[in-house]
Image 1 (tube, rainbow, N blue to C red):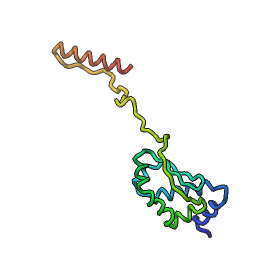
Image 2 (cartoon, one colour):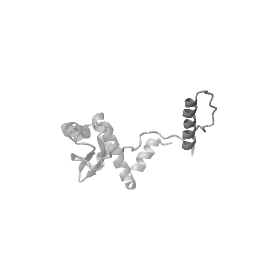
Image 3 (cartoon, helix red, strand yellow):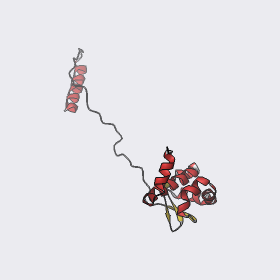
Image 4 (cartoon, rainbow, N blue to C red):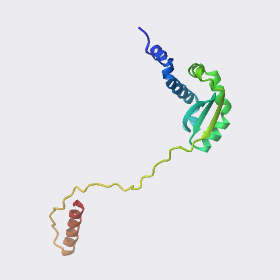
Length: 147
């Protein structure tokens, strides 16, 4: 009986699954990079033998340029990357800041809204008239918010 990994490798070697092979290569490249660079990568793609990194922010681009020799070294020396990305013939590595970076959405309403559970039917046991008036006003407010 064949191992699951060998069956998957055989399936991925077929031309119909070339994009899956490419995505597997990109996932391995991303895992091999330092954590600080991994957070800044939006997506990767290969075009004309050049591996392009789309980054989220210009600060990540500066860090990428600073560590460019490390990245090129990783691509040429790590055996799993050579094996997975051998068919793409990556000769150059470039990075750019994508204008399609996701922006955090701001919620307009931060005050939580709850459905009123009280029904305003309670007994007022006070003898003072001004306290009774306050409780009657509170009852009326509860009834209005219930509607």
